[in-house]
Length: 192
Image 1: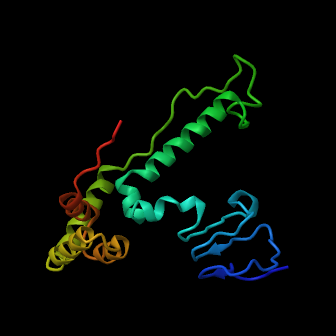
Image 2 (image 1 turned 90 degrees about the vertical axis):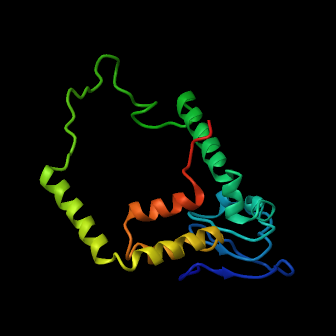
């Protein structure tokens, strides 16, 4: 039995060694060859694999990595495909969900909600949040333009935007960060 952290595999796999596959385990493969004869669904709870020969990541090299996949809307189309598959199975009953398509109350005995109270901020809470934002922006007013310019440079160079954004939000609000990124990349529009 293996106890401890997930195994770390790196590099090109040599001759196939004898290996015991433990279930309920989080493999974290890295390298350029997947493990033959195993599939993500047969292994574990959170399987991850990467490398240029991984069948699930075939788009990676050809599309230019994650940024290329985003440009071609690969992730979006995969999410839409999986969503349609899930909804189809839910609708036809091949994916039983208690209270949705199985174990339903008899007709006419369904629970109805007459009125649902929504949580709303009071005027005082709204004003406090606006005041907090104004104070934050005033406190960091001198640092913000350079931080936003650096964020835009990283976005234009297709660098690690997440790491730069973590630094930028120390001195800029969400609205300022969004505005700076809109200037570089434009506003997302749904492609229907």
